[in-house]
Length: 82
Image (tube, rainbow, N blue to C red; front, side, top):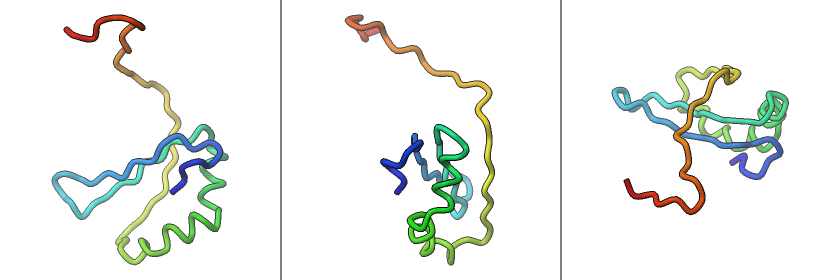
């Protein structure tokens, strides 16, 4: 997939729990430009072509992260048992 491409962070393929025919591909990129470059690439077209016949509807939407929360990592050397 896009692993190893400049600006690629992560891809997630998600299936809706209550409607398993609905899927979501979530992609995280360092920049909007890197994402758009991937979308325009021949590799992307070749990779997604077989999937297109399965799509009833497809949308591409871009979002900017405004807030992110993460569980704090334990300090180095700290006992992780609680």
